[in-house]
Structures are given as structure tokens and as C-alpha cells.
Image (cartoon, rainbow, N blue to C red):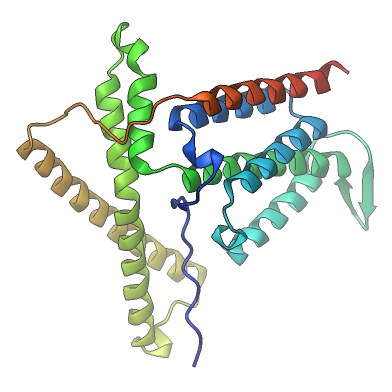
Length: 270
């Protein structure tokens, strides 16, 4: 009997008594925006190294166990490897160039791809750490609080916060619908005669299109049900989440974030 595959769960809250958990969600969002912006503007190996060391330190302080890290699918690993090889062959980057038979692999292109890959992993890890240490209600309240200055210039902050809150709450529903559709497709294949299973590339794409159509139909149905529920409650309203006050730890977090950003800028100057 085959063992059941491990269910991949991402962006889940991990309750731990740590300094990171006690920070205001707005502090984490501002730190995320600043760090990713400075890492983008000063992208090099030194700035990415500083960013990565800071993330590892925050992870250690948050006391989140290593088992909370989601399992990476094998197809994603293969896709990254294929993308790196393709980038090395087709890139316009300069030397060094490695000649393998008739193909010329540009090492400079692979290095650029590795920088982009490391930056993407660090941004994703930053998002995951925030999701580990922040409740959903805290996200909603912090965005509503941070958006107050924009209300004065006519930005529809209330509508945006409502959409954001519904999107976050709808992620588990979407994932559950996709699991149900995948299970139904698996059962259909098991009971389908061998000569009728998809063997050609065209048939595989047709089955994928059918699965995608079913997923879109399910999403539209869920959206219609949610809109009807919102209309029954009177439409948009001011979203109030779990409120937290700013304390000394948040000011220390801002100071450390500023130091990390200055260190990234220093790597470009030198």
C-alpha cells in the first residue's frame, strides 16, 4: 500500500511565544516593503547575503520549527533547473562562456539567474515568516490602519481592505476545491479504460483544459455565493481585525530594518 503524500500547507500561523509574534503586523509589512525594495535596487551577492542572514536571524528569533517549512514539489525543482540551463544557453550575458560540444553555456547568464532565484527565495521566505508569526485578523487591521492617510486623497481603502480580507479568507476554500477536483480527476482516470487514457500531448492538454474549466466554474460559483452573502449583510463595511498597540519592540524592529537597508546600500557604494 502506498503511503499518502504529505499535504503541502503554506501561509499558516504557527503560535509561538516570541518577540516576532508580539510585533504589530503593520511593522512587519513595512519592514517587508523596505527590505524587498532595497534588495531590488541594490541587487548583488553581498546585499542578498545580508538579506538572507537577516531572515535566518528573524526565523531563529521567531522559534518556528523547521518542520513548518512546506515541501517543495519535485516538478518545481526540475522547472528551476531547466530554466537555469535555458537561461545559460540563451542569455546575452558576457563572459565567462563554457563550450560543451556545439552549445555555448554563458556562465554569466547562470550567475544572473542564480541571483534572481536567491532573491525570489528570500522574498518568499520573508512572506512565509510573516504568515507564520501573524494572525489573519492582524493583517486586516494593520492594512486598514496603514491606509488611513490615503483616504484623504480619495483612495478607496475600505473597499481594498474588504477585498484583501475576502481574498485571504478565500485561499483555504480555493485550495480545498482544487484538492477535490484533483481527487475527482484521479478517480476518473482509475476507472477509465487503458485505451482511453490520455497518451498524446494533445489529449493531456485537453484534460488539463477540462480541469481548468472546472476550477474556474467552481471559483465563479464560490464568488457568487460570497457576493450574495455580502449583499445580504449590506455590502462593504469597515473591517476590524485583531488590534495590537505599537510598543518598544516595534521601534527596535524599525531601527534594525533601517540598519539592514543602509548595509545593502553600502554594498553598492563600495
